[in-house]
Image 1 (cartoon, rainbow, N blue to C red):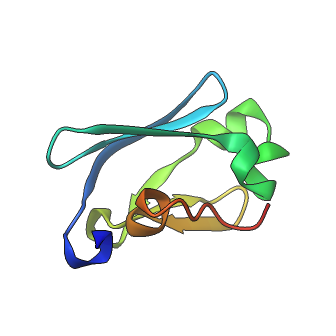
Image 2 (cartoon, rainbow, N blue to C red):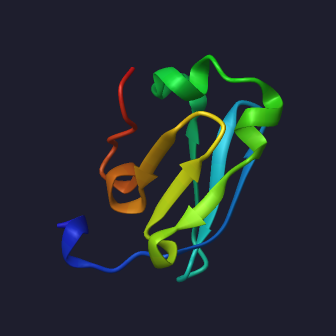
Length: 81
């Protein structure tokens, strides 16, 4: 199960309709913004303003008041649609 492992985001960015991140094991993970209602309706500037939070275990979009956990993303949970 994914939750049994520790995954830390080292870098996160927005690119061409995708949220992208590099994990501590150097794997790159991407997911399309349309899977999350707040991200789907955001501007390019809002999408690009991503913060890595909680010691690398989460992502935050302060302009959108949206947080996602890295484990949730890896388990295909992207927030409300």
